[in-house]
Image (cartoon, rainbow, N blue to C red; front, side, top):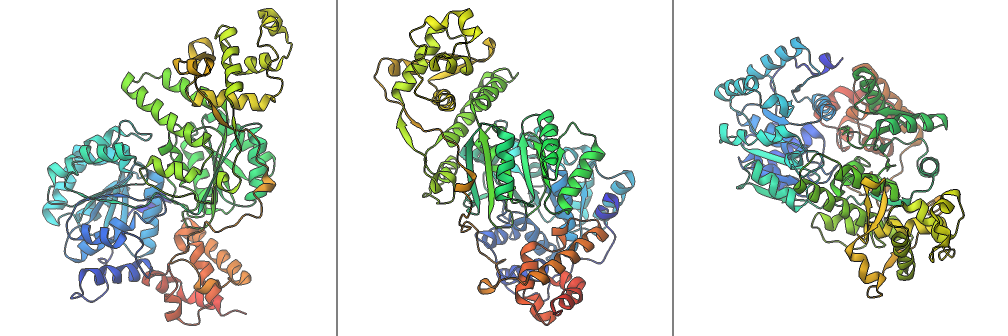
Length: 637
């Protein structure tokens, strides 16, 4: 099926709308409406498209769901109209390539991929189509692009037709300090050296200022214009809960907030992925595992089901990027702490790509901090990398432990100022803060008096005065700190120790099986020279979140007119028809038409082809292909 779908046919050249004399802005807008079915550009899209279509280089930082792909797809078609050859898109994610190619082909754009999913025949046919001018866009993996064979092929294309542009997607993969480093990206500067006349655009949704500088340096984009859109995803609600019984907490979250919704659950290990997916399925949540340790056929089958079925939950490893352009993911949950703010932002950004309300939920505890510190300290990386990794983890701990607006903290990491959002857990239910100086001193004293040889669980028992066999064996019942913390619960003490680690007053000794040790920063606290405010630990009840405002949604071109409510019966028929079309064509349902487009049809009930063509998301090719079916359903009573 992959071969049939993604091997291009030698078809008629792409036809742009007539009006060759139209100014560039008008021509771009005409293409936007005719091909993509969008009535207007969003944000900086128009400026980016004009700059790239005019031959300029660009670095684009835009959040997931912000319309990055349009920023190179549309200029590619504009330059094709002006006589240039195909555009070459570099992407590290096979699934994302396939989704975008499938979507473009639905629009009548001649697109194809060159990656490991193709057999030898498919590779030959795609290369032939490229050489014969039968493609508008070609998606290629970085590993293939830098080979001598592909570069020789590209030389022939440049000599015969020219290349419209090079688009380097997921450009943060060039950063050796980043969470998604791909060595092949370091070689992509050869595009500038080998084809200096071809405009380039690098795009990413996750880059702090340091990574932006690295992208510019390593991809030789010093003369490129930099376009930075807001990193804010206002439709996503960020919630971080204290980890008590994470599976039960996750199940309660899904049942209370997202019954029947599509979602992604991230875990750190493959074993935990498998166990969590099995556990959720046993408790009535349709869930499938997805990680690199699975055989290729099973993983591909699970991915296809997630893309094409409604209400399916996929449990995946944090380290394994899914790269799926599925717009209706309603939640992303983390049962383990990511490695960095960039990783957290990228993974949570897979929720709500359609602009509708979505949730980013995470359960977080001291064991997560210990585990991530151990992974850093025991890695084979050099000291410089470990320092950067530790700093990135510290920034994520700051986000997890903050008592203020999480969105403000998240955006500030990317250098963006903002105000309290009113759509995160801390804004909706502000946590209590308390002067934890005395509790901190007790905890630090317990660490010191037990010889800095024990983990948090034993130290909590010491402070709460719990007599155990281990306590007696070590003689800790005779210590002055034994029982001095009976006023706090076990969960509260776990929170104290976790925040002491996050504040760098305590560190984890992984050579001593997770023992807690004092840092030099703890001395002023023990001497009474520093106060320690902390966030009070408490479990947020699911009931406090129910009935929440959905004002986080971002209205835009996909909103129905004047807030008209869709006809539920018609919407159900439209979705059933779309599912049938998707099965017949072997593509994800959202590639046929997005949920927002179906909802707009169900609300407007258009009575003519012209009226249907005004619905956002229906371009000329889809109008031609599906118009009669859609009008027939809209006309049914």
